[in-house]
Image (tube, rainbow, N blue to C red; front, side, top):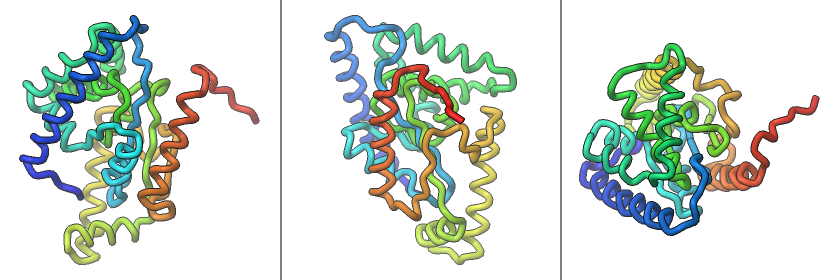
Length: 242
């Protein structure tokens, strides 16, 4: 799995602070908007062993959007000063939407009530309220509103995913298979325990891509194409034709 050094994480967060603050200044100069966020975000989930972070950064580079992978989300959610700074960067016109979305999400029966999970949910919602960002993992497809989020998921054959793990970890095929199974159990437990959802259910996603077939650049192109369609599709236009 892709790792970040502490220095790189801190440097990335400093860059994101400037991004949040600049977006807030721009929003304050703009005309008054409705309470709901008007910009789209991308929530990317992935099977273990698929290049989720690489695809996210490819999409981010093409769109000029920041990427929040699971390590950055963990850091923001756990570090109270970082978390507070993020919330302060949310435009005041969107605070009521953020509060309503947060309270509505946590009112769902069975949703976790731990302090860390509360902070994580509020972190993802705050990032989503900014829009124009890519959030990798941590249940983001189940937290952000479907109306303003493209929810994409990467899958791949098990053998390809084992090989990818073995390549990154320099381990045997047997060890890679054990790691993959253990990590998949952890991710599935996290989503099922906190969101009461099956992360593998395609009905929870707008786009499911085989990363082995399309590759990093191909997946990025398809995600951007789907985003373009989603942004122009009228809200509430969900009719299904038999």
